[in-house]
Length: 165
Image (cartoon, rainbow, N blue to C red; front, side, top):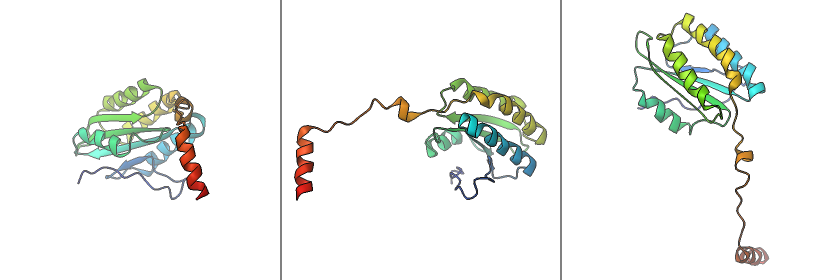
């Protein structure tokens, strides 16, 4: 098995985990990260995901990105690879955001922490709390509204004949 995270089903939109991990994350930390979604969700149209992979190759994060098709246009997903001692071995973030520097910044910041524990989770929370306001949601409808499909005249004739029949 690849150990990829399935996209969570929305059962209760008011109590929805932000951090997905095979190992337990304290309720306090989970709630703090949920507050980030509460704060930046309406304002910046952001949905944050943090995925923690235990003892896996960094290529798994690229597979996760492909599996989630880079996420929705309003999402920022941060993948973190840790070993058994909770030392951070790698990070990979992906998003459709127009602010591409934010993606690299959140990766570098988590790697600088070197280990994941309640203290460093709190440090990362503080960092995200002050930097996620730069997230810029993509609006694919506006960006690609110039793309249209104009049917040819003979297409319209065939459709008209089929409709009459």
